[in-house]
Length: 227
Image (cartoon, rainbow, N blue to C red; front, top):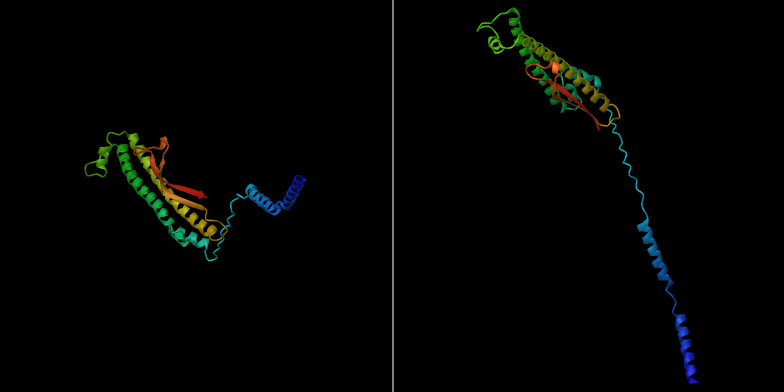
């Protein structure tokens, strides 16, 4: 009898203990919510735009800056228009190119006169004396055929004329450059991305135009850069 009552009390105690133990649903729900947020945060891909930022064009009109004044200054004195446009760094480039062409004019003119005199001596069959002009040069080229003397004379004359045209062209480029700076950079909405660079260069002549001194002649290289 007592054994059965003890078993009943044990079963009743176990039942009350099981009813008293309630699951902690609040902490489980909070943990589940936190895990969901973390998973959502890590798994979500944030879309980013890779398009470059649009750069606004610089607009800086200058009503007091006159392109006509820049042109007139450049026509009178090379580089004056560039100084007027505050592009002083272009002045050495301009004078370097014009100076090189001026040297080419003097160089080719000197040798043109020399070979012209030698060609006249050859044409008339005259042998200059020790006191005559270009006597040393006549003796130096005595072994050269007449045609070589005539070709050298024509080549130096051509190079001299091309050098003169180069000076005129460089002066004109100087005027155009001053006009571009004055007109577009100071008057219109335009970024400073267009630039022009003028540098001395050496040009290789065609085979038929080469002379005794080589196949290279001085020239001007013009480079336009658009960034």
